Image (cartoon, rainbow, N blue to C red; front, side):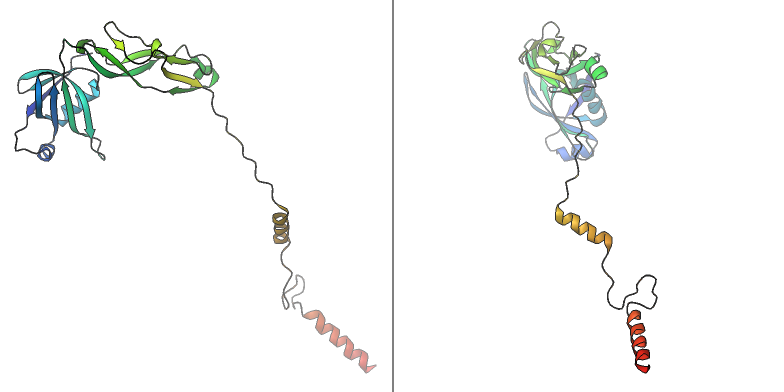
Length: 240
């Protein structure tokens, strides 16, 4: 990887972090090897690009008013809405002393179990902790997932490709990723209706009986019409 450089300048004592941000810069603190806590500011765009390349495991040459220090991004705070960097802790390292750092795991290749069996790839760890001299610190550690050929196959720390001078601190049997069987979608059968529900449904389908005075289909005069006809017949019978 190409050398990553970044420029910064000391923040005067009377200048607040809020003022620095308004000016389009990011307030930072530098501490570590032979460095007392030093408040500096870096322009947002160059800092954003440097962090995107370096992450927290790659050395950055930080130029502070003409003095260069080898540093690591130790902690970065982000704005909750814009996502931009709003504060950074830089850790100045001693190039002759080993340090510990978290390094990203890079999964390489293709898992046959996923391609041929439809397995689900599940990464359980995306970083491992390593120890090395600052100059030997890797940007990431690759692991080939081509060995994942059957369900429940896994890759562990022991499968990592680790360069000379670097020691992985995590246990060798720590699982980094595994392939699992896809979960079957369960078909949920509708609940069996009770006897009361069946009776209620039947009643709703048949409909309620017509109320008194209501219209009977086929009889426009309504439900009272047959009663009138009966009275007329009775009167005729009395005249005979």
